[in-house]
Image 1 (tube, helix red, strand yellow):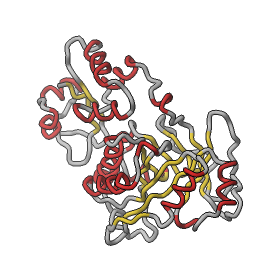
Image 2: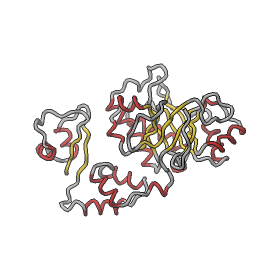
Image 3: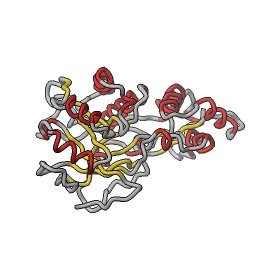
Image 4: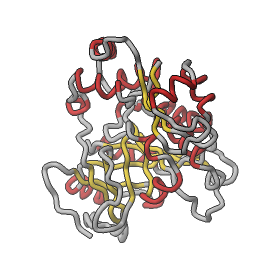
Length: 315
């Protein structure tokens, strides 16, 4: 399938050591035909969990810099908990300034080649926590981030609602991308080299819908952000401060506006019920009471809440 070019979309490829060492004649063609390149930084081993840097990472990065091609990085994660996910980001940050990656640092989460990978059997909660930890670690270091995965893997193996504040790069080799979320930033639509880069029989091709330039990152007004905060889209406390600051916004100005549109000075967020959650554990987490959660959400039976249910937590 070929995607027609438009001013609103940018086209690019993703590469790793599987493409081998790319000669200059191919890089010159990439420069002519691509707006960006996504480079695999590395991966965590399926079995041992050892962290490895892609054999061609440094050469590919140097070529992008030499030809002045905007780039992003992705890391194939097999992290089984948040601590391991943060370690993956720490490795990337030890080799490159995350802010230099215009097209982001992506957590690649998918089924391993033989289906026996150490992270393949994680449940939704565990996988969601690990991927979110990866993304949050990138944000804390000032980088742009998101999750790369196939549509069905995202739908069936993670909690979709947990990623509304993160970019999604979706692999879906159909005539249209099945993921329709507003946070869809990129679509990997084929691996058959429809951009016709010389020397490749197959090559992943992508379109980018989002403008990752600093100007675009700050397009939202303080009022828009304050309402998003009120809806729980930016987290709470230090997490909210870190996310807004990393995205280039004035946290103090946004927080002031939040309090202005909330005259009672009551703060609120949306909590998506996860497996194992109870109203007691949720109330304890946010410093409120079961009775208040029941009242604010008009819950008929406090002993019965559903995974995926959205609760407004006022505190």
